[in-house]
Image (tube, rainbow, N blue to C red; front, side, top):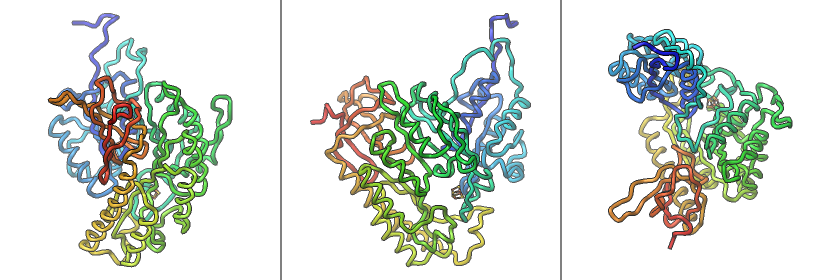
Length: 461
Ligand code: SF4
């Protein structure tokens, strides 16, 4: 059958396997949006795809193994595979393990990956394909979306190879970021997750270049960005939830805390402290490594008592002594962080830390990891227990099926919980009209070390 002037040709289909962090997910979304604008369709499975893209993570050696396994699976299931993402910078290792891959491109090489798809699965161009308005593709649920404000990083933390993989800090224009945020909110996104490698450094590379936005000058600066995002409005007239991730405690962070107290910014900060002992932070070459962080945290809580702080820590970094570790535990007791993730130090190929002396033996790392988790879980549990009896806003992620008694449960998150990394709020007995993305008031009835349990405020007994 031939195409008439009004029929669209069968579009070529692209499958996507996206591994790694939220930043990689944003890259996958951008690539797919671009491909769809070029007339490609998406395939939800291997079998229906003309070509499969694997967006890899190469941060830790264990992530590389996972990436190689995913490439192997795509090769076995489909055979026509293009690799991109952080591990794409190690083309030789990929080709050694999987010589059949069609092309390998590195992190953020959007043009190259799109070209590779065009080469290996040429698009079926029809006269009307480019005229069809297409919304951007989002791999995250519609009610929350990641907003990437910059690529790369100007620091040189000893355990990290991101600056080698992704280059120096390159900030996006503030007006482009705000336009994207406005578009997301207009399309139904109620929660914006601001991501980068170093959100507090946004605009340092462009000397905080100002642009005109809504008849006013705004700078590429974290505080201007936070204020403008807080000025957006979702359908019910309230500001969207806006979370700042990967924030380093530079002095200007103090300026965004009042926005949280005013309800314009979600009272949440994700600060990857990684350690507290000055000697370890120095060996790690961490940015914003200053002694007064605990005082700052205290002053933030005075301005905004509900602020939730989440962080991650590395135990067993080379040279970490018993005293350093004890310092970290004492610091954690003082800091009373809401949620903590921990990692045992693992050498990453190409990282400066590999050359440091005094490695910590594996059993000691395990022991310290277990101790740190015990302390931080106890603190989280106490902080969550203190919320029992309170009524909190909860954004709904998922609504379940009715059980044998007809009760429907829902899973959501409070303002203290970012998707995928923090805890959840489990609600009982919700109406069947409740939908993902709804923001409801919930009365908290119970808590454990990570999650809260409750009911809609007007239904709790
Ligand atoms: S701040 Fe440090 S850990 Fe974060 S990306 Fe830059 S070098 Fe890596």
